[in-house]
Image 1 (cartoon, one colour):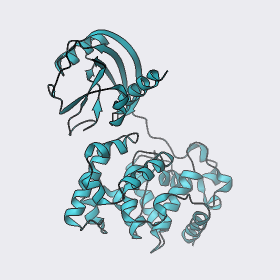
Image 2 (cartoon, rainbow, N blue to C red; image 1 turned 90 degrees about the horizontal axis):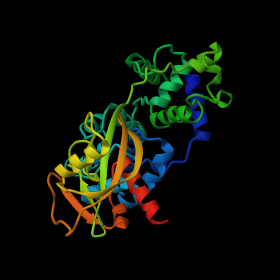
Image 3 (cartoon, helix red, strand yellow; image 1 turned 180 degrees about the horizontal axis):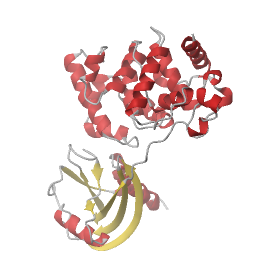
Image 4 (cartoon, rainbow, N blue to C red; image 1 turned 45 degrees about the horizontal axis):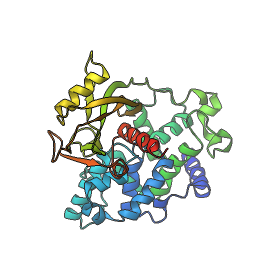
Length: 359
């Protein structure tokens, strides 16, 4: 009886308070899939404009499969974690080859697609196909940790399993689409991190942590992991009014993205020594008139990245062809560099250059 009442209150709240999101207009499986991939590691408010722009250019699987990978990267730029878009391209090829261009509607077939794990498969099955799967994300864990007053660190496997089991107990058969979204929505909008809005929560009468006065202590955070520092030095190389950029290899970190040449600082090196070593090795240039451009910071998975940018000159004539290990390279005017997709710190450097050029 308790669980039935919780579910009813949850669904009633969702029907009156849910956000109007573009993929909720039709629950088209393709759109649900793309939205779920975009929402991995990325906040909802940030995803929506990217999703709308993506849909305008890539409305179906065929459009993705026919697109140049560089264009896909450009439309993904700003979301980060580019392995996601590479897997989307791989998925599109498999879906066209093995599933007639339609996203498969079984859990097993979804799990066989590149980049789709248990969470994403369950989300697609429940939201796109109304199948009875439970979705447990960070919002759901936080909500359940408070609702049931869990006293274990939120990232413990036991907490995830507890939430999954409780989710199954609360799940109304045949109503997984609304139910899973309601849990995630309540966690995102009301049972928020730090300052939950308990006064408007539909589950306020059922919340154990509220009754026991432990809301400020729930969920119990896991021990934070320290980010590994990564110090990069790159060169904005100018020759005959053009700037050199190169494309990273397909595999590995930041695959297929474009960058300014440079490298990671070695122990005991100064930034200028790193610049001379890295640029001298690949693309093999000896530059002059080296000047500081700026220092830019970002984070990527487990790394805290500091990128130091320097401008420099390469005496003419302009080199031709592809250099050293670079898959591809370009000499372009500054204004045209914006057409390419870059890792976040390189994009910050480019935006700095573009802003200064307009002053």
